Each structure stands twice: as C-alpha cells, then as structure tokens.
Length: 250
Image (cartoon, rainbow, N blue to C red; front, side, top):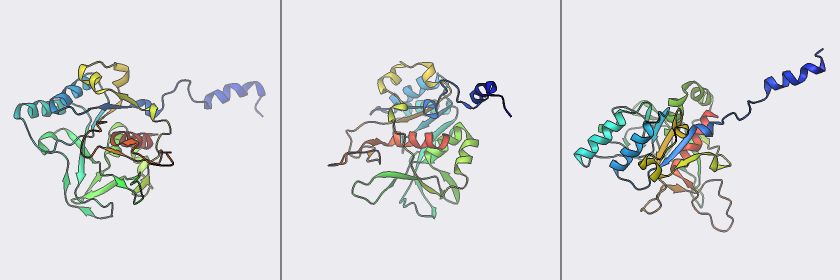
C-alpha cells in the first residue's frame, strides 16, 4: 500500500512540465508576400542565418528566368540544411495509381532539396472544402510523400514514421482549433532581417504566400469556417500545410 504522503510526489512525475512547448511552437510560417526570386532569396538567407532545423518552401520555381538572380537563389538553397521543396503531380486524382509526371520546380533549383507534393484534395461539395490529404503517392514507381509529411519527416523521422504506420493513405486534416498558435512572420520582417533567434532556431520554417491579389489565390474553405449564410475562403495553403505538419508531429 502506498502511503498517502507519497502521492503528491508520484503524481508530479506524470504531470507535464510547466511551460512545456507544444509542437505548434516548433512551426513558423514566413509570408513571402508577392516578392520576386531575389526577395525570396534574401528572406531565406536571413532565416537560415538563425539556424532553423528545417526550411520548407511552398513555392514553385518552375523555370529559369534571370541568369544572375537564379544563380543567387540556387546558391542560397544549396546553403540550407534540411531543405524541402514542392512538387506537383500532373492530372492528380488521388486514385491509387502510379503518376507519371511531376511539375513544380526546375531541377536546377533542386540540387540540395528533398521534395514533397502539394496537390490538394478538394471535396465535391458546394464550397470545395479543404478537408483531407494524402500521406503518399506513387510517382514513376517511387514513393513521393506529401509536402507536409516530408517536412515533418525531415524534422523527426521516427515520429513521422510512427504516425504513418497503420494509417489509410488519405486521412482528415486535424486542424488546430486556435490557428493563432502557429507563428506567422511578416514578409517585411523576413526580408529586412528583423527576426529573433528564439523564433527561428531549431524550428520548422515554412515559406508561403498570403497574397490575395492574383488570378488564383492560394486560399480555400476549411471545416473551421463557421459562417452560416455564405462560406468564404478562410485557410491559406501554407497554413493548411503547417496544420498537417503539427498533426504528424503531435
């Protein structure tokens, strides 16, 4: 029989440490706004200088443009440790088959990167809700992981493989109820180097856009949208990816 005066000590052993970080504290999103490649390269350089654990780019450099700026961008990418970049499967239907083609990034920029696909599964409902994701697909006979899964795997491979084990290929996104838990760094702060080491060091930093003024903005309706009269897009693509990273590593 355990004496009652020992119980407080024993209970304390099973309580979470005071102020213990959640996984969302390990994920940071950088807004690239509508900056060109030179601006994005400068943002990456400023972030890299503060020693993140993973840099993940929800950006597609699909072709070469300016020879000098492209060489600067490539050198910047090659200087990054644990870099993840986006691939896109052509004619993606989320069926179980071997997809034969990927778009997304010019190979010139991929010399130092792992890739993950960013194809989304939109529900066949009124609002094309962004509710699910595919953990992995076959591309040219090889396994290609979802961008967020690949990012999580680069941060903690063991925890990610434990998450994948026994799961269906396609699962629901476990969105964070409080989206404010995921820190977002303003585009201007990133490009000016107005950053704090504690916000970057040892963390997963995902670069993506919150830019609305384009033909096809990267924003969707999520299950978190509680409007009753008219549903409006509420989930940026980069935040959707950040939510999945948190789900995998939780």
